[in-house]
Amino acid sequence: MKNVITILFFGLLSVGVFAQDKVAKIEFKTETIDYGTIEKGADGLRTFEFTNTGEAPLIISDVKSSCGCTVPKWTKEPIMPGASGEIQVKYDTNRVNPIRKTVTVISNAVTPTVALKIKGTVVDSSKNNVLEKTTKSVIEQ
Image (cartoon, rainbow, N blue to C red; front, side, top):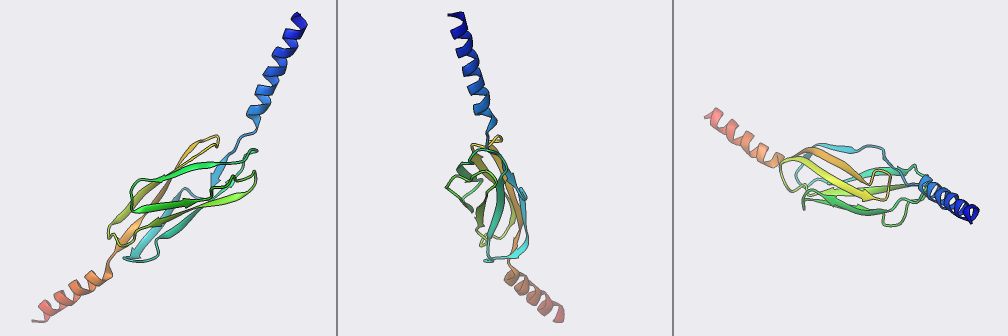
């Protein structure tokens, strides 16, 4: 009876150890995208590319942005080991301000939560042109 219990114990222990060996790992090409200085109304779509460098399928369960001005879109199917995927982020460039936003990725990877960043500045050059014309007009008088 002791032998049976010993065999069962080591059998269950080895199953638990082997089950933990295969995990998904998410590796991004970059974790920050810099929009630079862009015009109001410009294309706000950018893409974070990643690879599953683990040994198990990667499942992204959710992607959340820090505000409603940033809308993420991601691959819903499992990403097999060695395969790549992407997370698209669309920022509302009709908002004239500096961009400092976080996009949080939640998955079954070894690191289950990854914070991606977008940054930059949206400017309205039409307002700058009006200001320049007004200033020039005042100076000429």
